[in-house]
Image (cartoon, rainbow, N blue to C red; front, top):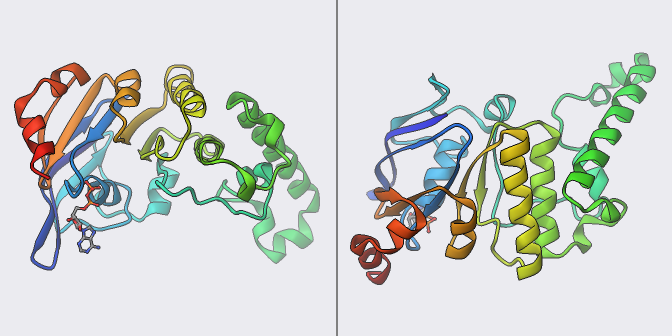
Amino acid sequence: MIVVSDVHKHFGGFRAVDGATLEIATGSITGLVGPNGAGKTTLFNVIAGVLSPTSGRVTMDGEDITGLPPHDLFHRGLLRTFQIAHEFASMTVRENLMMVPARQSGETLWNAWFHRARIRQEEAALLKKADEVLEFLTIDHLKEERAGNLSGGQKKLLELGRTMMVDAKVVFLDEVGAGVNRTLLGTVGDAILRLNRERGYTFCMIEHDMDFIGRLCETVIVMAEGRVLTQGTIDEIKADERVIEAYLGT
Ligand code: ADP
């Protein structure tokens, strides 16, 4: 689904990503690991259109998406979540979900004035969708809660919920497990697996928790010093001396 070919991202003279090449298969949950400073977040930002690469190419289903802005990628079903959740703290959980879909008639005054009935219909459809998403994620009891009051793990579930409001195809998860307690980590993991199996989502996830990666990912890609060092199953990479060295070297 996603092919990254020889991507470089330099900051001044510093090569944060230095010729990364990798593939993310359709329907997979692929882990991206590596020591701090390996270039994982920078590569995510290049794929998700937050940063333009210095050179190299990214394709999605064979189409060149290199350097496309995030809103274009959003319309193609490519989304990323952030390590720090981006919720609207004073709005309810359900309102947060309803904010996501990009094109709502209510956005312009013209529409607000002339198409009230259509807006009401769209709002009702959004409300229904938001409730379905909350039920899928088993957080329907929190729908009227202010998002700012959620725990770290509940905020991560809300982030996943936002991707469901637009029927994403491929989601880049940035440390979705960070700061989440053990019980909720199980729930977040279950939601990812179900989105993958039942809704056909492809995931690529940066993660430090190797148990969490082991539970979810068939393929794990290891980055070090801006490049892909190796890839394999969690057991293969854990036993790989080059991987151990890369971690010990930091
Ligand atoms: P990782 O996510 O694997 O920890 P990052 O992609 O965050 O690695 O960072 C890779 C390297 O690039 C780090 O040494 C970091 O300091 C550097 N870096 C990241 N973003 C910038 C930036 N905007 N300007 C300069 N250096 C950066």
